[in-house]
Image 1 (spheres, one colour):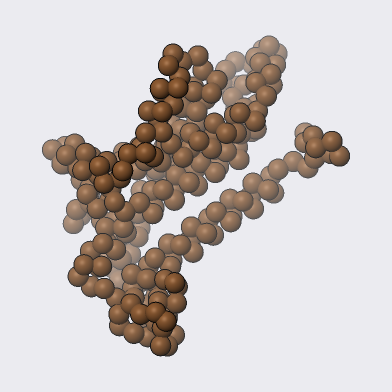
Image 2 (cartoon, one colour):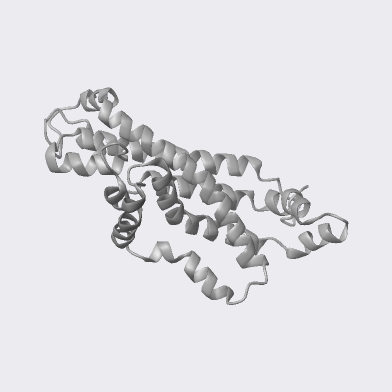
Length: 245
């Protein structure tokens, strides 16, 4: 529905549109405030994807392959940010970040969004690890490989689809996040979600629909590209369903 509204000739959000125009997209890409918010969100999302992928992968390995005490409790705590309402997290993070002057800063957003994105990586990597036979890793260790060599030469190549999917979900979880961004943004560092909230309150035009459409289309393209790359790198299988090396 937002796509037709973003093409409307009306100066306010209207469905169905009375005419079609790309003026709102031109206005979106030509507005310095919208571009600043978009680039700020992109930088945060890329950094979050990297940090959450590393942390989430290590956490999934510890939970699935490690010998942690109270493993179930550790797993529940790691996935906690997915359960706690974002508005509660936003208020809590604001109370912590404000005295530290982290509101509106890249480190503040990176910390907050990494906390929110890590559970997505843990879920996808854990699922990939459950499908990987631990005997392969033990065989590598028995053949003289150390833990790092076993991980990079045996484990990681076999769970790359889970790691890649987790990275994409982490990127999208950060880029699309709006509630926490509303609390920890300021005039200096404003995410696109905060910019949308402000325009809904003070300047409700189809530019918001254009910005939303760009976000949705970019997300769909990213997911489609990930699926294409994953399938392209999947080794062919023989008649018994066993992958060729």
